Length: 298
Ligand SMILES: [Zn+2]
Image (cartoon, rainbow, N blue to C red; front, side):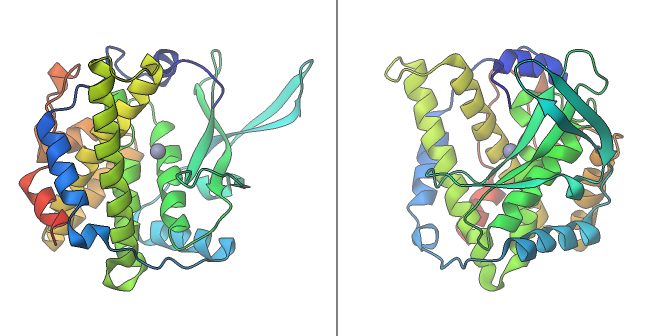
């Protein structure tokens, strides 16, 4: 994404714009710190390398069984330099978006959907491709599923009301595929450890930011808020799915399909399973549900 401010992004993506860096509760920090230190979550799973074609194919097969995807706006630059920009826009299947392996020293980089937000095009959102960490492992299929989900949801106007919730479905689907990928939930547990660590670290940083013990830009604090809020809500929803009956699982799946189809919103889905305090979105009360806490102790 080009460097534009989070507030500008929020406006262009059509989310409600009143948003402030989230103030995490001490309870959330203590709970996630406790979970992270459980033996089951400290265990290191051996994650194998994979060929990229196989990793991408696993994601495609998952979507073929679980969801019907719609085409998404793809922007291809024919000329892109300081003097001239010429681009071709067309709608393509999200699996046709170019996948770009990215070599990074940052091991916390998994993937990103390269997005352009235009001023004068409808839709305002278009995608240039999907970057994935060039170190391809068994977890790559989850990261790819995460970005494909972004492409699906981000290209439907109004599918997400609040910026805070813009990672919920991507994280949820990442967990959904992770559960299926390997025996003994090896990949799912790897995802769990990573995300619980992410919630704890970012929640601590946000606390320090508000207490002026840590300097970070408001934009970075908003991005951190998005991950903390979305991760917690994604896990609260995933715990419902994980422990749910077959009909609950089918129901959640069909609701997600409706969101992809533009007939339902992420907030409506969340509201069915938890109190998301939509009206009080500036400072949502946020905690892991009893079911999510049970899930992390499994
Ligand atoms: Zn994401």
